[in-house]
Length: 262
Image 1: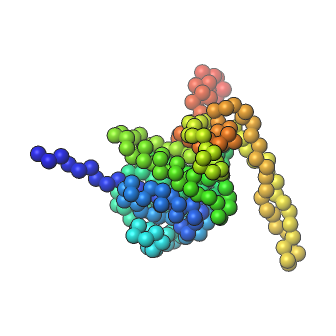
Image 2: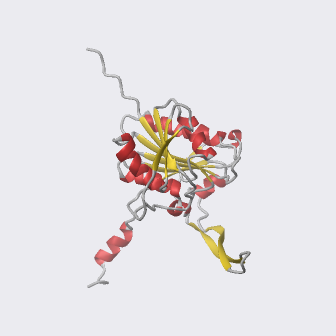
């Protein structure tokens, strides 16, 4: 009896920088040939949207021709909307993996909370789809994506080659902005405790009215050598396993033993 041929994996690609960004094109190029690639991404930049979804206005979906023969769609919604509508209206099934990015700019440490890139990946994980968010520590439109492409293909290929993958697998991958030859390898990390010391810069528009521009300085309070911030500062690709369960189990046990709410 002839053995069954394993079905080609379906790779869903999305992002938050919009469907025309160099980052998503680089991600498509990075994984081409590893499976059937389908792109569903926002039609405009959605950085910092976090896990927002569209509920108060219509959600538009249009097929576009931006990546040669690869099926691609743009939506008027958020990165999370892209994942939801891809599964329900385009694929009509869960893909084998969802990858988001390549984001222009860091999504290490506290950035994971605000990131549309990572929220799209997290939505896929919630739906039981193994997922990865990729970010490059370079905000420039003309950033060199080759190192990020190299590691994106390596990591996605490794996950797809596994016989069994946790359906809730969720990885936050950040790539340092240095030439490929200077990257020392991949390091599995924890999320660093860091935050932005924020300020709203007050300005005056041409009509004499005040407006505010959010600014801030990134401050790292975690000096240990197993964090994503340390890895990136030392030219490693950081890989942080993430979860959507936000329960503080240590505090839960403490509260159960205490008489605080009795």
